[in-house]
Length: 151
Length: 151
Image (cartoon, rainbow over all chains, first blue to last red):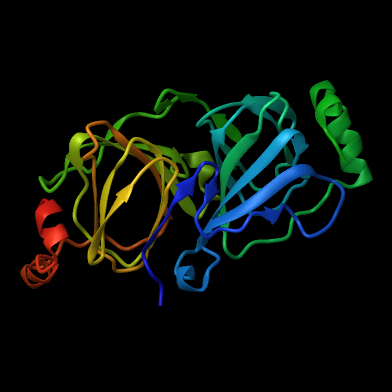
């Protein structure tokens, strides 16, 4: 049975929410943490979507990946850049980013400060996929992406 | 076909996002606006959930209602109070509120400043219902709720 609740913020941590590794394994990301705010606990299973908070330390980046499920992101802290399909966009406080199905994306904390954002996803979703060699070649055709991407 | 995008924040407005009435009709709310950030436009239909931003001016409140679909809320601005089932909770910056299915809830900007929050919901969801006379009587048994609620 689901329970209504307030999960209190304490700086950029939340009461009772563990600070986790971004992913269990891999080396295609750097200096990024994950907090699962709403949706994963036993008494939150009525939610069809999960709200997580990711934070990248300066120089940190997420995995360059794509997947069928979309992401909705809202920046809560700092500035940075995101590879979004065939371009690189600057992002800052409260900007919303819609990552449409099958769009390659990678977040970068390039502003000399932490970059923190909410990211909402479907509870049931496909697994992310890394770019193939062919896809990497295509992505590298774009100067801005080639300079920014980390794999 | 969905399109990835950055919806840029400008204060507590977003580029290209109209400021709307909270609801089309009714008098059971006060001094509250709605901006639909991601999910409602034609090229965002791949998202199964909608991300909206609500802002209450000082003294403003949302409808006291319940529904089967859950809400996930993250406060972006100010402080306030929320009626959450059988209690009233103070809320502030970056607090997350999970409103479980069928929980009566009402947001109040009681901090002398605007209260702004993100609210994510399923695209396909049931309609909110106002409390019946019997439910109002039950809610009024709680001193804090009786003092705070507006109908």
